[in-house]
Length: 115
Image 1 (cartoon, one colour):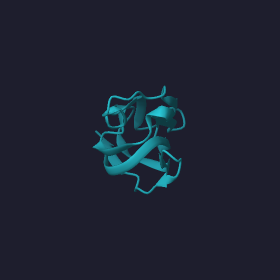
Image 2 (image 1 turned 45 degrees about the vertical axis):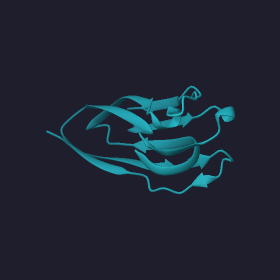
Image 3 (image 1 turned 60 degrees about the horizontal axis):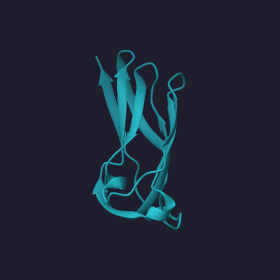
Image 4 (image 1 turned 90 degrees about the vertical axis):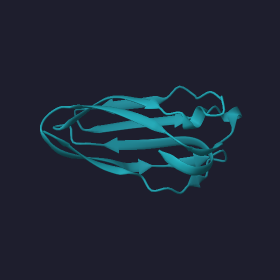
């Protein structure tokens, strides 16, 4: 989720998780970047379940300009791989505006327990 963002164009990020506990099955773009009816560029994603890492970028088409508002940025679909507690973090997270300047924001962190 992103709240009250202004002129958002692209979001490259790196996701980390414990591959002994979780497996990332898919990543999809949320509704925020298309909420005005404009199209996205094809999402780039590289899911590395063996190392517990995924690299992805979701972007609006350059001629669409940035978008402002609140909504779901991305959805991550995980599957349990084993029992335990895993932290899901975004050590590299950069929202950028239509001028490719950084937009400040704190990346979320989540702890998941699989029993």
